[in-house]
Every structure is written in C-alpha cells, then in structure tokens.
Length: 327
Image 1 (cartoon, rainbow, N blue to C red):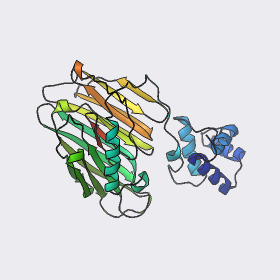
Image 2: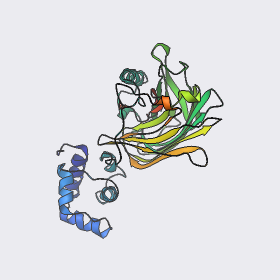
Image 3: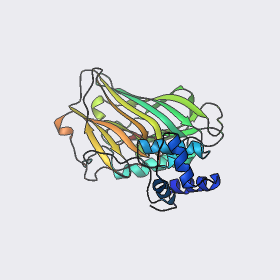
Image 4: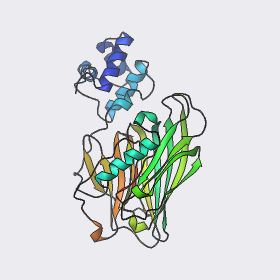
C-alpha cells in the first residue's frame, strides 16, 4: 500500500483541510466513543494500512462527520474485509473466460464504459424463484441507489447464456421506479441485456429505490446458482433463492469473493424452502448462492472460477448467465 491509495489520499486531504492534528482527531473520536490511536490514523493517511471491518468502519464513519465529509465518502473507498473459510474449489459456477469478453462488450453497447457511468447501489435485495414445475425462472430485484451526479441514473442488466441453457432472450420487466432504455440482443453470442433508467431526475447525493423482474426461459435444473457483483461497497446485500415444485437441490452453499479472499460455506434449506446470504458493508466483490441438483452435476471447469468485473451487479444462472444490474 502507499499514499496514492484512494482512501489514504482522500483522508489525508480532509485532515489537512480541517487544520486538526492527529492527536486532536484521536481525542475527539474517543469522546464520540470511537477510540483510535494516533499511530493508526497516521498509518491510514499514509497508506501503510487500511481500516478493517466492524469497529474500524465505525471509526471511519465518525471521521467523515468530524472532517465534514459526506456520509460514506470515506467508507466507500475502503476495500472489502478479508473473508474467512475454506477456499473456493475450481468450479464452473462463474462461467467460461470467453463469456467475460462478451459481457463487457454488452456493457459497452449499453453505454457503460466504467462503473462511474452508473449509480452507487446502497441496498440490493434479490429473490430467485426456482420452480421445477415450470419452464420460467424468476429473479426479482429491489435496489436502493445513490446518484453520483445530477441527472438520470442508469444501471445495466446483462445476461450471457451458457451453451447448456436455452438461447432465449430473458424478459426484463420494470416493477417500480424504473423503465427500460437501450437494449442488447445478440443471439449469435448468446448475450442479452438492457439499460435500466430510474424514474425522474435525481440530484447528486439523492437516493431512490426501484424494482424489476427478470424471467428466464429455462428448466429449474438448468439453473445452478445466482450471484451479484459490486464495484463499490454496499450497505446491505441480501440474496435468496426459493425452490418450488417437486424438486429440491441435493446441496447448497454460499459464495463470497473479494480481492483479498474467497470462501464457500454450506447452507441448508429453511422451512420456506429458501437459502439466504446476507452481507453488510460488503464490496467491492461478489456474493452468491449455488446448488447441485444431482451428484453428477458437480462438474469441474478446467478454466476454474473466474471473477467478473466492470459491472455493479451481476446475476448468474447456470454458471454462465450473468445479469448486471448496476451490475
């Protein structure tokens, strides 16, 4: 790490503008029941270390208030905490490397050259309804975003289908607070997507909530996971998968990945036939739920797990289907 790290650079500039010494800042934070040593503050502003999770993020939030920063302006620059747990096995869950290029091409076609082109997700909730009694699987998402600049907030939603999935365009259905703008339909590349436009004009810093549904034309057994990728830190992320119809998966697990670490933990169906993953102050990184229908579904992809970046939110169905909502 060094002083050019975004968090260190922003913190250092804010401290200089405040005219406070590190000792004064430490004393004032202690008075707010957010104790932190002068040495730790020095390491943070020089880039020698970054705040971790839990109490450290509380100190950063207090620093924002003390230094006159907007809420989350420093917290959002802190990398995601290191995850605990066993390593992720080589798996086909994330998909094939060629899908990543198609995914990025679709984002560019929709006008999302970089994460700065879409809003910051503060809260993301998704319920995947996997019904073995139908040929349509549903992914219902509710997102709270903060506008990073004044104007129309936009978020992408993109799927790149695996060869094992029916090559049928997903249906993107606005439910509340948004409309569909530009669209991508590339059957030859098995890629589909839309631009989601949040209703109304927002000023920078304003918050809005919207909801939409994605319907996939596929059998339940064509689906073996759903995941979401964040380019920035979110307050709360909740992923749920509910299994309907006569079939239930053999095994289920939660998946988490950051630049620092990866982890997979087993999870059981609850009394509602759901599995769940909930994270607070998570990102940047990816979280997901995945499952196995039969013993022979534990296929191994020689390419191994692959990280997807460049989108705020990404759904995955059957290892190669992604959706990036704000991605």
